[in-house]
Image (cartoon, rainbow, N blue to C red; front, side, top):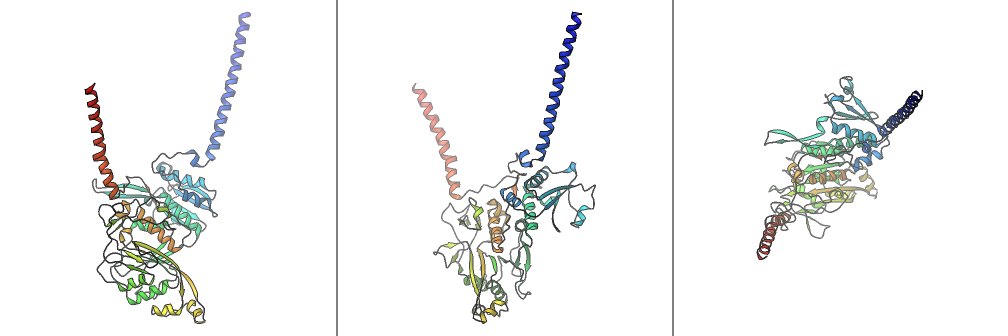
Length: 466
């Protein structure tokens, strides 16, 4: 009987401990479920860590500021099958959804919904493409456009060099939430430089539309023009074109003019520069300070003054090759390679007669009654087309394009500025001025080896004397 009682007591204790263990296990499981539910509701930036060097799935400060300011509801449709998702794109979209209550992320499987994309575009979209919708407006971002690639001539294949999904998505959200986009016309008919695909994409990311303009066939600069581009013309403007350009600028027009050194006389184009107090110097600029050029004295690394346009270029380089000097009447006599003018221009009959034009605007009517009307004219001038060259831009890690695109945005008065650079997923170029290259060559080839040699010689002599 005694042994039976001991056995029953032992079983009772085991049952009691088992009950405690079962209850504790249930509590732990319930707590884990609750924690998982809470964590699942947190924004992905708190639950996912991006270990890539370029922070591919991390939103930049500019994107976060835009998302914080949203007042319109935005729906992002992610066209993808679960088994084919791109991790970089998927995680980035989750960051957008978690950054604003106005962003809704919806995945659409193209197999289950084969006709879904047809209501937004006639083109066939690759999986991992994105459609952004705001009200009745939408914008399509094809997956193929999210990555940049370059042809590798050593291996004769294309290599992925950049990830541009954030720049394009943020730009699309900014455009859809801001309404009408500014429009810039590119002058044609004078063998102008064409805008490359990469630069065109950068301009579009600023939410600026572009179109061509032939002032020979057009009566005037279109009324919807927010600015005009004149990009390294190889022939001069005609008298009629010059009059039309003056007519536009004198009534508050905006223009960016890029010139190159040439032996072709261009009196009409130069008359536009001279009217606004600018004059090109003869020849090209050679730099004697080896801290401001790279490789050769005409591959210039000019100082970029801190302005509204260049505030995000601090610490960056701009490369201008074979640039002409530019003197500005308001300056101290120094030679520039580029300048901007921002002034109130009086639109009156006298100014138009000086340009040889007949004005038909309200400004002329008011001036006939003894009144004048003012308008803000903005003109930007750069004296080397290498500012627009893709290889030169790569040598300064995108500094050239940022300066030009910022200038275009400033001309348009674009308040919704998006200048998110492509995230580099390849080797970056290291820009070293000639002075620094010489200094580090001396240090690495001369001073450091000499230091090791002297240290070894001293150690050998000291041990020999002991």
